[in-house]
Length: 95
Length: 241
Image (cartoon, rainbow over all chains, first blue to last red; front, side, top):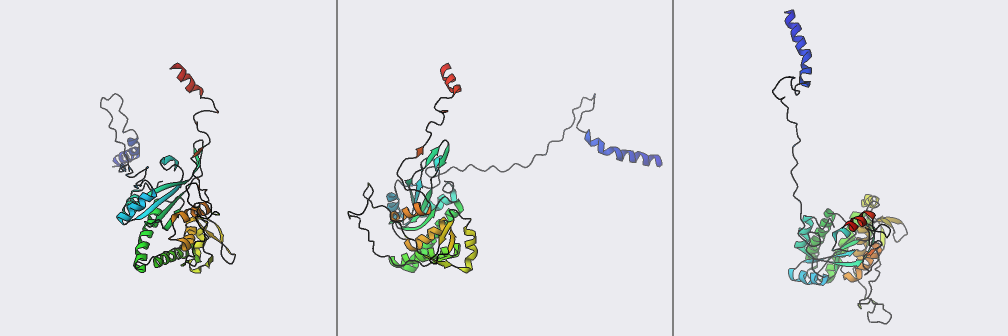
């Protein structure tokens, strides 16, 4: 009984060290070592790139002039949105 | 222009507004950097009278919020006014005065009567620009009566808002207002005026920009040239070719 208990204790003491060498192939053996697949994080859902559906890199549709916008607004019974800018609106990098 | 590239903002503006833009100022390009430049967004009635202004660049949520406020306020004012233009104007100016009070903690009396315009466009003493239009007048904002103590914390946070600067009330006490606060203060007296009479005050007095028709000024047009000399590597590769 004592010998069995000594063997069990030795086995328990050596158990942590068995995992460290589990991936390394045993010298002289022909079988490849079984490698555990790396745990990869779940892939993030890809965000669809938003393409602007309006003019000048925006989602807004612009009329040619504020007067055209006002005339169209009267027809469509809408309000008018006028953007006053200091810059070059046609180039999105400069506005 | 990130706010205008937002799909929700674009959809709302396209559904409720007809849009246009106009260049009223300029800026400088120094190397690869832009210096100066600003933007003001006007929400107007179809006859060109200004309902609301967003002064300066803002994010998509704020722009959408302001656009929705204009649409809802217009519907509300039309119901109250019942086809009376004078009542509609009064209602809108009161709405701006109310927003100044609740969002910025300051009280102004909305101006409900417009005196006749003393400026005669055809007079010899009136200066017109080369296109023949009179220059935009400087519109005096209504005097601030004072704070609303119920919204005192709004004044405390006004110092952090964009374009925040000092302003005095009619008793000489100093307060702080940002760009949007100044817009509400201006429109409490001048809402429903034509855009050509309002834009000068917004662009120059509120945003601090100069109205200009000059093109974009570039101080270093040939940015790839190193102190007037073409870079050596490029010169050698062009010689080899």
